[in-house]
Length: 409
Ligand SMILES: Cc1cc2nc3c(=O)[nH]c(=O)nc-3n(C[C@H](O)[C@H](O)[C@H](O)COP(=O)(O)OP(=O)(O)OC[C@H]3O[C@@H](n4cnc5c(N)ncnc54)[C@H](O)[C@@H]3O)c2cc1C
Image (cartoon, rainbow, N blue to C red):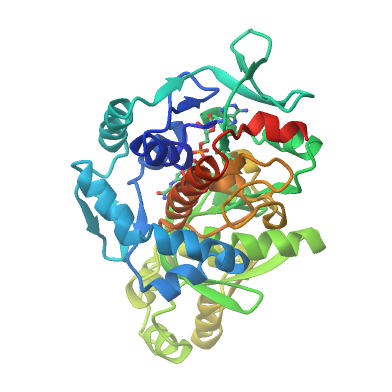
């Protein structure tokens, strides 16, 4: 197994449990760095919504991921977690978290279990593709790549976001050279860039916009966002980031619209705004009548100028529809996840690469994307389990099989 993230480690567990002799290689000095980072703000393991809705979150990849998620479902993931001694709970949004919130107690218990199955972990060991004879090449730090004999190989090398945590996407070139179809890795679940005024950037960067709605190309998503020095980040932005990314591929900028009070109709808002302002400042008036925090008022000024329209009808219209121009998305280094990766046409139903018999793939390096909400980790766990079962099948069918020998042909 190459890659000690959730996809690689769960595959190693399934294989180890079945008595397979497993070595996990990872280029970093410790395992699961992105998994641990994911636990920083609360490890959102999966989601509790009905399975049909859950599967829809994977968009075009739904069909390819469904068998894997059916076989290792959100309920199975929670049961697995409980079995490691970590209870989980369903948050108010339906998202599932470990009660500890963090990933570290889970990872500690998991590594002990892997050790009990005899799984070896080799750190500071980088995947370097395959040699001309088709053998897996692994290089220790400062060392030349060495061929590693293996009856089967699982690649679980992640995407290309947050490369300092380990997954840098450099595997793409190695696989393309072997004839594996790979789509470019693109940022997913990432922030967007908006040319704010100095005032907004200096006074309001870092402030949250709670209970808002964001519309992109006619599709509206409710949630939260955060004003940043560069633009906007956060749940609603991530949920729309694929649509924004695709639109930016076609034009230099994209118009998006914020509704700062999605729970009120424009008419209700208008009636609130009719209340006399008296001597209150506009910021106070809008806070009291429309429930808008100063950051929202600053956003209104950003697009509506100063002074803001005094007509309550016009003001209500602006609050319900703040037009913003997105000029770019944040770089992949700052994205939560990546889209693109190993193309499904290059992978068989058991997660084996068609171009490299005996070599399997799992996790974020496959061509699927999903919003935040636990769908990413669930996809990694489910494909890791499915690929491990693919390997068990391969080993059983081809007792003398060797991934490397198969590669030679
Ligand atoms: C800040 C942040 C928060 C997140 N929060 C959540 C969340 O709450 N819920 C959720 O569902 N998802 C979350 N995610 C996404 C989730 O962490 C990833 O989708 C998931 O970790 C991907 O798992 P993976 O096993 O496919 O790859 P990774 O976890 O990226 O693991 C891949 C491993 O491969 C190793 N590797 C890469 N290249 C090589 C090489 N050439 N040689 C050897 N080893 C190599 C890396 O060092 C790494 O250890 C978050 C991501 C980030 C960045």
